[in-house]
Amino acid sequence: MIVLGIESSCDECSIALVEDGKRILGHVIHSQVEIHKSYEGVVPEIASRAHLQTIAPVFDETLKQSGLKLEHIEACAVSVQPGLSGSLQVGLSFAKGFSWARGIPYIGVDHILGHLYAAQLEVSIDYPHLALLASGGHSIIGICHSFERFEVLGASIDDAIGEAFDKVAKHHGLGYPGGKLIDELARQGKPLAFKFPLSRLDPTKHRFDVSYSGLKNAVINQSDKFWDGRSEKNLPNIAASFEKVAVDMLYKQVLKAAEQTGLSVLVAGGGVAANTYLRTLMNESKHLQTYYPSLQLCGDNAAMIAGLGYHFLKAGQHSTWEQSVKSRVKDFRHLPLS
Ligand code: KG4
Ligand code: ZN
Image 1 (tube, rainbow, N blue to C red):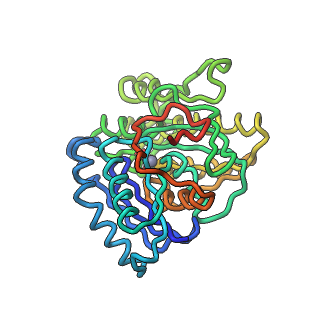
Image 2: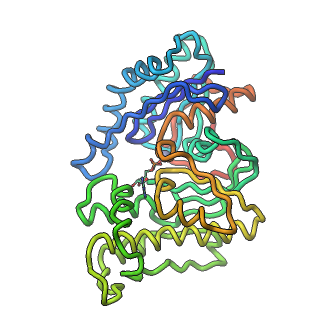
């Protein structure tokens, strides 16, 4: 089955054509970074207007790339939650219009589940397995019981890890989005030049949770306090030391989850899953076998949405015209699409 995937939850306008949940036939990711750069963050109103302008050309380009014809497309899958409401509505409206015009079904899917599916586009991984979503909006550790059932074990109690990367980068004037830039700088720095504190959460209340606001504040406002007194107080050293603590925190909780659930296969997803130190640390772990999407599929993309949507459609599920969008999703314990 050839599924058209649509992703517009934040600042990437992406369209994909994927066969049977695996084979990517066409895929275009149009980033709005250049538009939002001067604001040092995504401006929701500008994002939705930009989606409106680019979604049709991005579709045309994807179709051309695939060499397919409109009549080959058998269904649509679109991100409907969580994300920026106005941006999600552009993608959903496009999906509704396309499926109405072509007389084919469409399904609204959860963007988080999409990230957790991304690695499956390239390799087949058995369920259940541990999952780590590390992105600009989320830091979640859980168990994927199936493509549609994700049980949350822990999450950030404040900022998401990607948000912390972005805010530290913004403070140092590195530009937006900052995660990739910090990653690049950190490669030239010493990770022990600053001993930033690993947040200590009460394990009885926050067994697998993480926290980033304390670390972010320490890096931004108190870096001198954590300096080793010898190394250069330069940006690469700050970046490397910050990145180490931010990623170690996730690793510590993932290891605890592996120990307590008896699951040793971990599937990572989300923009921060592209981080060099995170990938090295998890790959070198004797306790985990970790799968990552390729770098292009870590961030927001429509291939993961088409791939995931295929499984819902194959199971006979589809959305009705009442389908709407949700900017926030409180609970991932049960598939929350309504
Ligand atoms: O998954 P994503 O594209 O969008 C959301 O759903 O949030 O993730 C974006 C986040 C941003 O915070 C960005 O700074 C971060 O992923 N990011 C990275 C790297 N590449 C992107 N963080 C650390 N290291 C990277 N290499
Ligand atoms: Zn995302």
